[in-house]
Image (cartoon, rainbow, N blue to C red; front, side, top):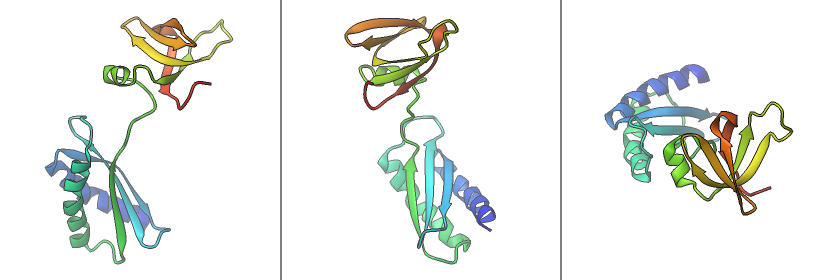
Length: 155
């Protein structure tokens, strides 16, 4: 029942989302809660950031389509949000935004014992990533980098 309900809700909500140039990134039903919680994470179709206004504008039409569908016969709480910021840095925008932030850099170095570096994001070029490790700038060729992630503090 829950899977069928979720699929039906997702179909209805996708139609509403299209009207606002949004898409439903994920939909979760927390049926173990009383009242049930419907968590919807939305994304813009043009990949721009979601604002609180986007969530607010989507809320009433989403609520109306759920009510009019008669799929739920109980009370519920509707939560609409964005997916938030990913810890992994991938785009040029990420590197500009998080310059100076602490990062973990996973390395792909076959003959090295060092598999992870931790420092402050300093610079990204087309050939290398530079991080500040205790005041020293270390340039790492991109062919040696597996993953770059934000971290909460320097270890």
